[in-house]
Image 1 (tube, rainbow, N blue to C red):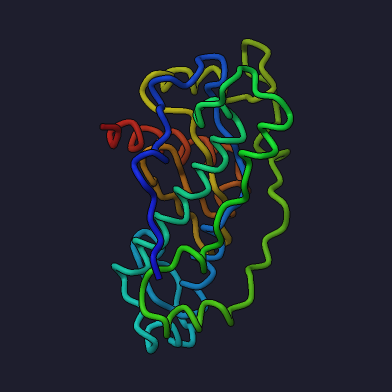
Image 2 (tube, helix red, strand yellow; image 1 turned 180 degrees about the horizontal axis):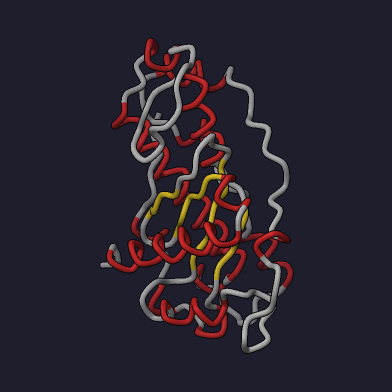
Length: 219
């Protein structure tokens, strides 16, 4: 199975409008990838604080390297599609702002994790039979407990400004995981365990640390 992203699909971050810089907090295909990891029991850094699992993916041919490649491809697929929604002009729309017809024609849902799998067919068969994770809609009220000093509804907004120009507009993808964990997927994604969101202090520390790592990974 072929699953690739061509050079033309790379987002021209250097052209991203300054007034659109910020971030999104949501879920995506990465939630399924991590769910598959937990179901099987395979350990892949930094998702290495779980145990148990049925081992079916490993028996079918899943490896640490294959999982990591699939996971990163899935995250970046979500980033590409989210970027197209936030800034349709990166698809080189003939007009700006794009018309409703162009937005409808250009928009597409991200490919599923199963569609992005490019390893052994035996693993794909197991992934196809795996039930999706039970992850409720992302709740952000507990990390939005106050306004920033500038009055922005995001209490971390002022602090995030030091990353403007160092990292592109970015997305935080929440996954269900039994321990506190974050992962950085350059150029524009942070994957965060749902337990991180349960405490605003932990959330702030993990987010700032992840952004520092993401800034260091920019090329």
